Length: 238
Length: 238
DNA sequence: AGCGCACTACGTACGCTGTACGTAACTAGG
DNA sequence: CCTAGTTACGTACAGCGTACGTAGTGCGCT
Image 1 (cartoon, chains in turn red, blue, cyan, green):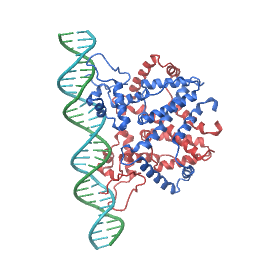
Image 2 (cartoon, rainbow over the protein chains, first blue to last red):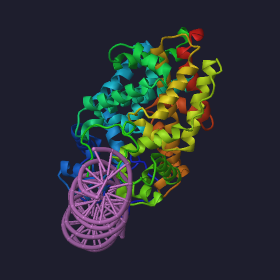
Image 3 (cartoon, protein in one colour):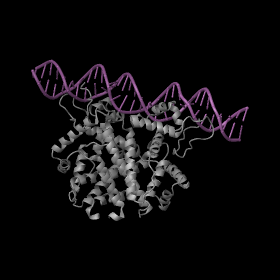
């Protein structure tokens, strides 16, 4: 028994294979793929050590040979979907390129609705995360600002993408394990909101709500937020 | 046995007291306060139904008379800290007022480090949330843009505050239940990052990292992000 | 060549979680 | 006054992460 270390550990620093002993039955990629499959099909809460092990066809505790803590399994998952990013050749138009990156991130999150929840915590620097960061910096090459400002742009933009997409998904998805539909829940929440507005305690809020006609176009709201963030970094727009 | 409804429910719509039966021993505020006390002292994960009940001095299952699901307990907590917001008289300078609001939110989150994690999910409209929204709109009265744009400003700004403060807290806090310190963990992560950079696979990332000298000033980064978001909505700055 | 040890595999078990359900006590409305 | 709706809460269950112990495997070193 080598003993699971009671010392900080980054899963990416731990070598996947170290000489001695029987050949491992799986790779990290196998495990990540299994976890992703479960999360996609049954939601993040269904990603338990037991389920992942069953999906792989091995004993529960065998997983701990590959992944010291469940949290690390999450890191594997994040890294796995990070591979879906298309690292295209920068066009020279940094705004267009960054918009494309953001839209692609949003698309990935819509494919894997559990991603925002995992990204909400502090995130490690997995290999694919680093590759994506590097790609963004490559896209920002034409932008004439200090390197530090560029990383701040990437951070801010990614934060906005995660927040907005995460909110959209959460409102649509919260009912996954509930015995009622999203529409029913939304109706109840809206009814309550209406009753509060009717009290007259929130005049400006009421105005804002009654002014808008029809349902909100989440996609348009998202795109406007992106444009505004980019504006804030664009020397030609200020 | 009235039966816990298998129908959508907003806790704020359910009346706190309905005629019949023995007098409840606690108010919702009591319960929220107990949960907040535990979360502040021992972290969000220590907020279990059993712990909260023990803190209140009642049986575990008695809590379910006040709160149909644990998720609703979280809503109570969010609303409780929402009361800490100072709803000051708008000064007429919307930028300064919104900055103040943002800094205050950040301060609340630093007092209650579990708030960002709870805010990350889709959030309901608790009474204090509505009051805060109304207050923000009051601060934005002098800004000459459509009401819809104002709500988008509030949403974007709040999102940025939550993301940034949440990240800061998470990196500092992740070691709460770990057998090592935040410094140790950070050192290991940085060592790994250094080893990756040393491979030369990420030239631009390397440049960005080596360029900056000394540790990052999180507070300054946060303030810059705020300014940029406000810039994007300021007619005089574009 | 062969021994030893680091490694994989995994069953069992523990302490913890949210909460369904049943029962007893209580009190306001008809 | 009675009865129906409430509060209170003990018990129980399914499920979680993971500590620990044991058995088998095959590389690296002497």
